[in-house]
Amino acid sequence: MGGTSPLAWFKWQALFSDWQVFAVGFGETIIISALSLMLALAIGVLVGVLGVAQLAPARAVNRVYVEFLQNTPLVIQIFFLYHALPHIGIMLPVFAVGVLGIGCYTGAYMAEAVRAGIQAIPRGQLEAAYSQGFTFSGAMRHIILPQAKRVSFPPMTNQVVNLIKNTSVMAMVAGGDLMYHADSWASTTLHYAPAYVVTGLLYLSLCLPLATYARKLERDLEGGL
Amino acid sequence: MIKLEGVQKYFGDLHVLKDIELTVTSGEKLVIIGPSGSGKSTLIRCMNLLEHPSAGKITVDGVEITSPKAPVTKVRQSVAMVFQQFNLYPHKTVLENLTLAPIMVKKVPAKEAVESGLYFLERVGLSDKANVYPSQLSGGQQQRVAIARALNMRPKIMLFDEPTSALDPEMIQEVLDVMVSLAKEGITMVVITHEMGFARQVGDRVIFMDDGYILESGTPEHFFVNPENERTKAFLSKILSARK
Image 1: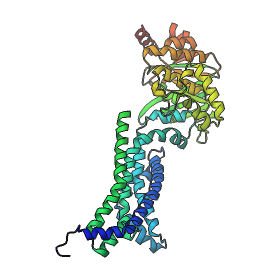
Image 2 (image 1 turned 135 degrees about the horizontal axis):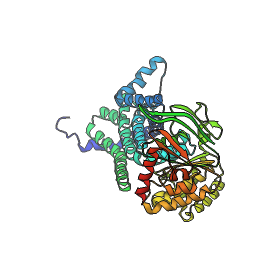
Image 3 (image 1 turned 90 degrees about the vertical axis):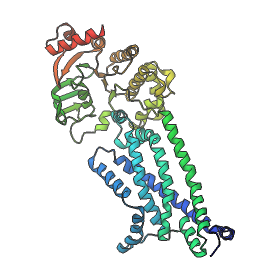
């Protein structure tokens, strides 16, 4: 190794000839991201709406869920699913661990965005809906959530960026994602620097457009109010 | 049509409705007057259970709505409310504002809801605004849309919670005109208002509230010719002189 640059040309050549390794990982990261995003959105709407419910136990469920998942590390949650659950006979494939772990974790942040969006809607909207005979869930679906969307979308988009980056913790449980493949390739070839540069650029290619889109949504929201 | 018996309402320690006994008969136009903070808004909001009374019994159209098993959402479909702040749905067009609840809640066929919606828009003089959004309308126009939205539920009872108080003076009359034309029909109306001309023109009965009590009840003539209660007199002289 002595004297060769960490970014020497031959290392890049090795990387590009093994490009499929990165492509597989990149594809896996996109799939895990997409599935855990769907789970996170479903949890976010459900738990977020519970946060504004009239019944105190429903609001308690919201608080416990959000505080517990936001204030413990994602790594512990993933390790719990991967290492602890098998002891009680639940053996999840690593792919499911990723989707479930990251989806539930991001769901807590989505729930907060949804709750904040709902709370930005004037109280009179819910009263008007009630006065017309809507139930709580009917009012949420037809009247409150469509309006709350505008406020919730920018922070939710930022959470999608975090979600994509957080899929990289899958590498710690041999997750088959981009970070895992990049890391295992790098430790075999010892060409760490090019591997991490390329991997970082691949994450950037997903996250930067989303972050830019989130900023545009925020600007639109300011202009619209 | 509406009956309140022994109704009490507390917000924490604050006692806002005290020993309310009130019966509104079918087709009656009841006007509620009184200073702000007197409990009149809370009273009208108890009639469709936007506020739950702390004690007492409320019956609407034969249904005891204060019973725990009352079909509240069903009852609300026939008790429409018009709010001070209009509360139109800003993400829906004017026509959609009128048709949303009939279609989603009452399960009226969409075509029918649109037809009757257009009819009621015409009634309030806003046929040409069916496809615009509420934010593009003036306050008076928005309140007329809110009345049309209420009507499109085909309610038996209409509750008006200070419908002209948030309006610029020049827009009050257009809303009152719509309400006067409504009053000529058989619908039961309960109206909180400071518009004494309106009270006199359409009210079958006026009640005066202060400090959570119904202090006086009578025909509009009774109120404006010889009110008995000292506080009623003071309130009326204040509000009438303010309008001159």
